[in-house]
Structure formats: structure tokens, C-alpha cells
Length: 252
Image 1 (cartoon, rainbow, N blue to C red):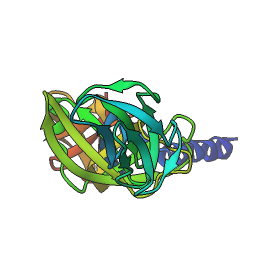
Image 2: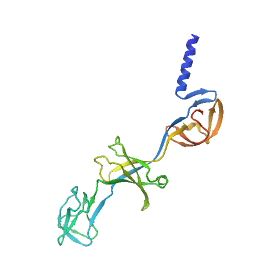
Image 3: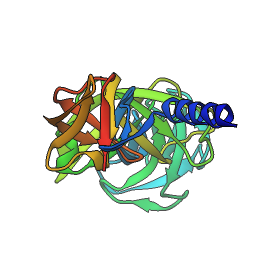
Image 4: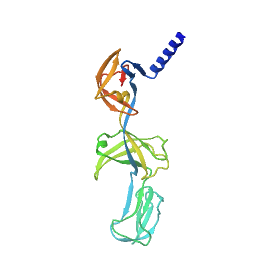
């Protein structure tokens, strides 16, 4: 019977070690984790066409004839509208008529848009960030884009431009390939990767008190000063400090 209890004790010890937890007179200890860490800035983006053309005239005139309607696809050079006096205006590039603001026989006033053409084959994602977030953004950083109904589709890109605009801090993301069905002005979720570390050392957040950590090194209890950054799921990344993956962290 005594041998039976000894075997059970050994088995329980192995289970505890396998899970990384050890109970000692110093309290519960746990091994640090070594894992990849990714930090990202998240924002809502808008799919924006690189080419958007608002057709305007410089004086009041009348629409004699319309050659297109909303949703029509036009090629560069196709006729769009004929104005009073036989003036014919043509499409400047291949695209889609996204908006039509006039009808035949109507008068259009100077600088008012008659129609809008967009190129839905060349688009990017535009997003606005707050001041705290924009400081962490740099050109060429990787970005992941997702749409509500396309969560399982992997859409990647990179930061192409960063600039202020009318009180906004704007970031644009060039996407490698948009999935079929994505149209201009759709909204999407964007995650811009601002920091990656392949083999980060993680310790339980609760083990860190006032930037101090108790560890057992080679059987000896030590107090170590550390700089950490909270990660997720109750873990913190060790940025600075004499902590090794082989140490035992005391969790009180």
C-alpha cells in the first residue's frame, strides 16, 4: 500500500511540472512563457477609390442629352453628357457612374457636379487615428483588413501614407488584393502591426508588484527589478530585467 501512495505522489508531481506550476514553501511558482508577441493599432477604415472625378462646368448651361445612368460602366473617351450648344463631355478614365445629379433638359449651375465617376479597380483604405495612435504608425508597416461578411478571408496590405488633413490624422493602407465584391466607400476593420517579437518572455501579470518580481534561480529565491508591458490573458512581456525562461516565477 505504501508503494501505491508513492507512485500516486510521483504522478501528481509530474502533472504539476508538466503544467508549469510548482507548489513550494515560497508559494506557487510558474515557468515563464516564450511566445510571439504582436501589438497592433485598430481602427475603422473606408475603402476609397484612387480615381474619383466630379464632372463640373464653368457656367450655367442646360443638359441636352445624357448618355449614361448611375451604375453604368464607361471606358475612357466614352460620351457622358451633351450640353447646350452641342458641347460633348467625355469620360476621363474607365470607371463607374457612382452618382448622377442632373436630368435631360435641366439647367446646371456653374461648379455644381453633374455626375461622379469612380474607378473601383484601384482602391485603398483610408482611416483616421487619434494623436496617441498616429505616433506609432510608420510607412510600410503591415496591416490586416477585414470586412463584416468576409472574416475568414485573409486580406493584407501596408501603410502607404501618413498625413494631417482638416484636423484629422490620416493613414492610408494599400491592400495587396481586394476580394471580389468589395466596392468603394465600404467600411472595414483595420489592424496595423506596430510591433512584433518572435520570442518574447512572458510572466504572469499578478507576479509583478511595483516593478519587482520574485524568482527562484538555481534553487535560490531572488528579487528582480523588471520593466514589463501588459500583453493579454493575464500575461506581461518582460522588456528589461534578469529573468530567464529557465527561472521559476513566484506567484503569490
